Image (tube, rainbow, N blue to C red; front, side):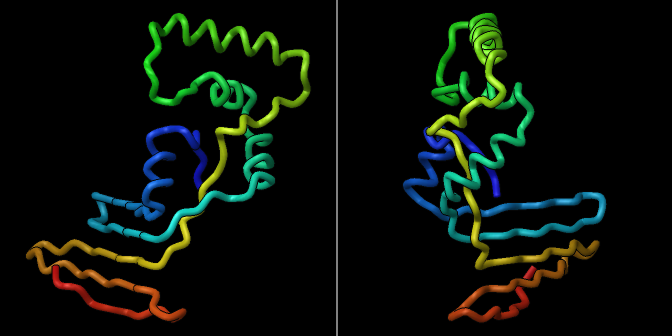
Length: 141
């Protein structure tokens, strides 16, 4: 699972095309794993439970950083918004999750494992889900 502002560029991209890939790369080991699949929003309940476990300052930042990636006049204005909400929220034991914030889950249907080799004859193994079964394939380097 991963969490974001639904109105962010990432959220808009996923709404238009709900497919994504994750990439994990370890250069010192010359290894890499790619995972791909459909992405869907998780339930409001799951998002709320996770939100409530986050540090208070992270909760406040989620509230004030909207529209995410939007323009803001200065760092000082951002800090002021943060400080203002921090002061207001001090009276509340729980800060409500914003409606525009929540989680996504990638349902993997593709895994690729890459192992680098000095002669560039890398090992590449792919697992693809087809009709409810995983199919193993060896790929060219």
